[in-house]
Length: 333
Image (tube, rainbow, N blue to C red):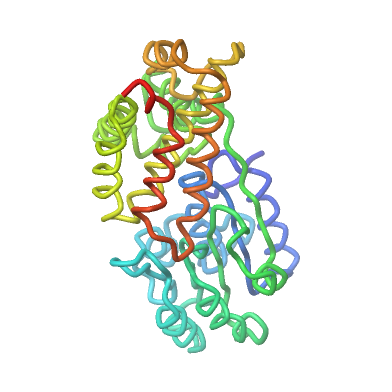
């Protein structure tokens, strides 16, 4: 499927939005859901470009070269609004939602539409979500609201019902590899590794190609997990205390550990599939020899539950301690 949008791996979503634009059926609110770095914000930004592109040929929008397209790509267009999480709590506060909706009510400074992109909307507590409802129910004619979230579990039904949901799926390994090779000039072997490590998250794969430090951070995070399994309860609780000090950093960490436990379960059960973390295959095999599939499944469930509960007002340290108690190895530590 051919299009000019700077979006890879989600052609069906691009086509859906292009048809809405072509037929004059653009909704005032969209909810884009999908895993971290799967391409939610990239799609939202490209949609904002298409809405406000100055190219005479509507079919060629976004052109990528007009003033509107360039400013939106750089995140500096005066009519493109981004929400920010509270740096201390990681929550999307009600004051932030009100500030964005207040600015959204103003007429566009120079574009056709004012577009508000609410990143990590699942971090908004019910009161903050309620603050958006009036705008969703009576949106200004020039306003487009785009909510981004990994899933709909933490969202109010009234928010979901007033938005058009676009669910982005994991991008196949082959598609990510081809994008890295053909669009980013990556070595095919490196592209294949990054595509597999990405877990279908094309944004992560592109960032890892551009910034090798991401792979180093990932390696350190998996080494931390390997070392943690050899610790006794007191040692694990010390790590829980350290990790609880940075809530925002826990999201990518626990997603990575979740993928590791998923690989572990697959190997422990003898599944003939290539693990996502294939560069750690030797370590996975060694650990799988000491675990039962039930232990791997318990650890996977504990990690998933903790990750899902990060959006609630939980005691982080206690939640991590409970998770670590469900990780294998305590009897041998």
